[in-house]
Amino acid sequence: MTRKQLVEQIQQKKSYLCVGLDTDVTKIPKHLQSHPDAVFEFNKAIIDATKDLCIGYKINTAFYEAMGFKGWEAMEKTVNHIPAEHFTIADAKRGDIGNTSTQYARAFFETMNFDAVTVAPYMGEDSVRPFLEFENKWAIVLGLTSNKGAADFEMQPLGSDEHLFEKVIRTVSQWGNENNLMFVAGATQASELENIRSIIPNHFLLVPGVGFQGGNLEEVSKYGMNKDCGLLVNASRAIIYAGEKENFAEEARAIAEQYQVEMASYLQ
Image (cartoon, rainbow, N blue to C red; front, side):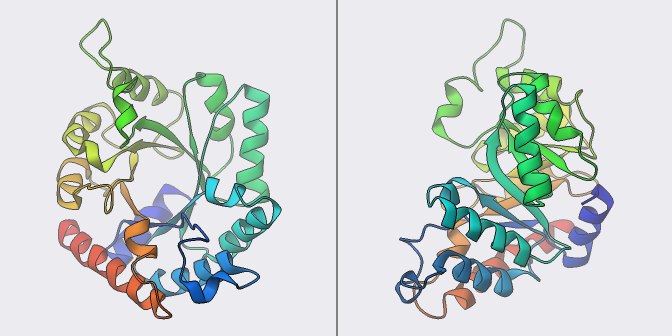
């Protein structure tokens, strides 16, 4: 998907919501747990109920990889069920030496046909660049994450007047451009979004952490939005586990609609 297409979806739907399909078979409604294809059936219902309210879906691959072959199959079926106009993210956090990263990129961009994959930049440019060499595909590089462990490395001050996460974002932004490179910026770090925007004013940010992790959508929008919106705000558990009974998809839609309505007010 191109940047132009992504921006058009945001404008048409008045939404920058990304629904996270972090599907744990032990947490889905009990009436589905015995289904031979439980994860896909659950995902299909969530997608069908929310597709007009969001502009993308993020699949955390760990939840599928843990299931072995059946999980990979469910993930592929899920991606194929998502409408073509939606932005699809493989939240796989890959990153390795160049030839290995090339194979990771092929797996998610060619075999699975995702639009984007999350990438860890610790090993440097040669571990990220293979993800930037696919036409109309995106690398979403970890910048400032929403977990407590971000303080261990990302928030550490360097000898200059910057932190490690700022150095990473500033450096990685030179490897690609605003048409193939995004950054993860956690919603629980909303106070830093304005600072991040001073480094990368035009790039899109993938913002997890809204919902159960306590991120504030109003603050994220205030400090993170740019002229094209520039935000993909992800909500996972707050949406997909909104209901525990047979009407779970309706409950999920209701929460997604709350996000969309609030987002529409910030886009005006």
